[in-house]
Image 1 (tube, one colour):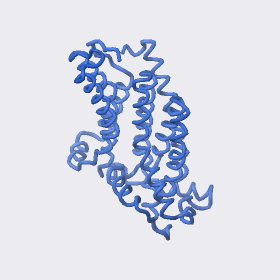
Image 2 (tube, one colour):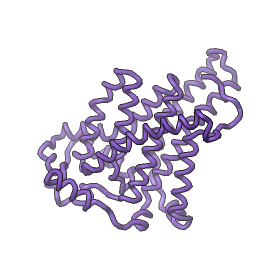
Image 3 (cartoon, rainbow, N blue to C red):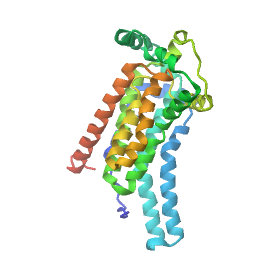
Image 4 (cartoon, rainbow, N blue to C red):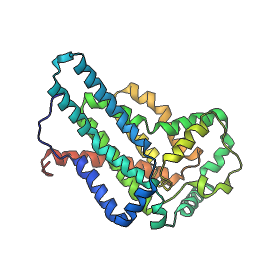
Length: 307
């Protein structure tokens, strides 16, 4: 990796992350922010960006400790700073997402849109699909879909790590796309809050889930997920985005991810977290995110943002 200059250069992902934070703080207000901080939140999802970043720093440190490639202390330090610099905006955004765990949004927007989303499903299918999916229930299938539902947190960081050394521009495009997905998702959570059919309409279901993985994983995820995050489905948006960049990275990563990503999409309905409009919106968010990231990087390249 070529050492960077000492001058700090502003990037489009910095501007986007900063803009989202500013708008977010302006929206909730200082008083609500104090209440949100007091309420706290589970921020362990930050580890899914912090972990690959830490592993890359560890490899750079090991190379320095072993004296490989003529690595000097100053070169190692510049490399560590650059690694943190590349990943840091996304840590900030994940911390922002964690703020949605607080109950302050139930005060700001007490109404949820679950009834409207359920009505859309019923117009399309007669009932929301997760009700019919009860006929599929088995411990093995529930374990598989539970694993797939969880993997959307892991795969983006894995694919980003694969691109980090291969092509820094594609790496930035991927993480910028993730950032755009998250920004659009937070807008949906604020203006179309919904908790999902399993929470909003438990009376629709007559069967319970069973499986060795279900309760350990789902209980942990439910502690960490934003409580009103059904529309749009970022599970769909982020996993679709990951699959696209896996395809660009190589056919092997794509085919390895494909069954888990397809399982992830189905799991959002099977596990009663989403309505079909949430999934449709998630795919739209993916397209917007990729196009938006490419457009922003083109503007940056032309120097139009003075970064």
